Image 1 (tube, one colour):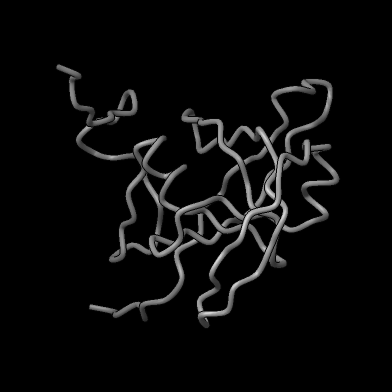
Image 2 (image 1 turned 30 degrees about the vertical axis):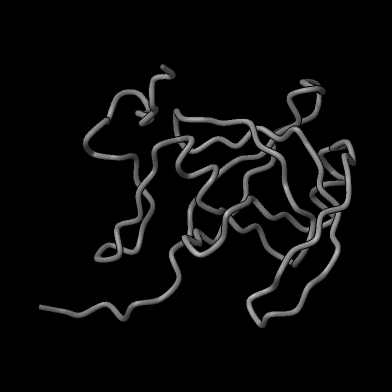
Length: 134
């Protein structure tokens, strides 16, 4: 039995601007990070997709530092046949897929295979857990 070292888990996704359907979607390799909430994209992708600047948000980086960054959107995220619409923080030099878009598309991480997959409990359509308002 061979042992694969644990490491980063990457997902093949595509990003597009739902307000400008004439623009080509962009296929990217995204780092799936359960410690991050949001989708984060580099500045060049925000410019390429012509995403609207919405506001500046303050974020706390992994090293504890605070930083103000642009928040853009909407952005459509596709993983296979699943998709969601989210805003994105503009920072870094690679795409980071946080838990908000992963939960929205009902994706799970498989550490043993080091891959992102659709939730095997809901293979056909994404499932969401919600509470009924009284």
